[in-house]
Length: 297
Ligand code: G1P
Image (cartoon, rainbow, N blue to C red; front, side, top):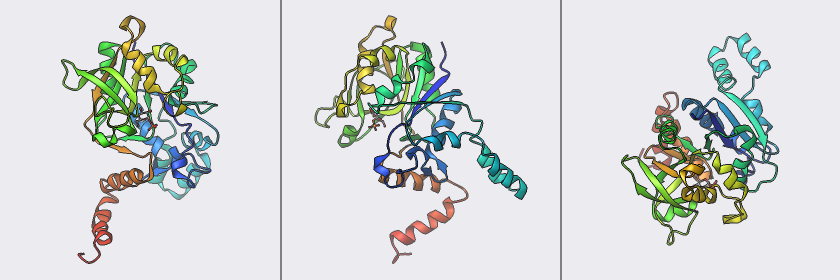
């Protein structure tokens, strides 16, 4: 069965970005000039997934408005003949068939994914976390879907990180396979201390999951941070037989990825992506040295 649905958890409170996120969802914070969630939706659509379920919570209404038409704004731009901006505004209207469900209790990422069960049903599906922004030039989701189609089971996106950063991520122990970019995941641990980490392979926020994950999540006890962790459910799936939907593989990602989950890396992502833009890059590139080294310029 092929993968057609994507789930985007977006129920977090965004406390790391207060006060900006007091009344605005963190997923609406712009990266350059586009809300971060739009990059993620575009990535899913780019991989052929046009049925998207966003897991939201209270005060997330702006997300729904963003992916809906703004008739008044469109009419005003039309009247002015501003077709370039009209195109930008309309671009997010019909990207995909987008559905919303509220998580209710914020019990963790695993719990958020479990909320998707009635919508997803018994199909494999993708999960995309908004704090990880994958550069559109280095798409990985289509490869992950192909690996799922070849082997069944679930597929993670894994990236080598320095050992002192592994405690920020889920961490995978893995064995090589016949494909240089695919590993077989043998164990997983959520945010281990760097000294105890079984490897330096970090789980990046892209998953292709077998629907068997729902049954496992329903019995997964709170783990790290008192939350129901997706990583813990995947650890169990890695040990289950293929006949029960088990088996976890990882696609090794070596492309460009930006973390928009904390302020410093969010600022870096903005600068890196703006530097690539034709309309902003040249001026930004010329200006940066003048602030970094006013004497030298
Ligand atoms: C989540 C997952 C973690 C994963 C990370 C990727 O953690 O629990 O396993 O490595 O996303 O960004 P979070 O960063 O939401 O705490």
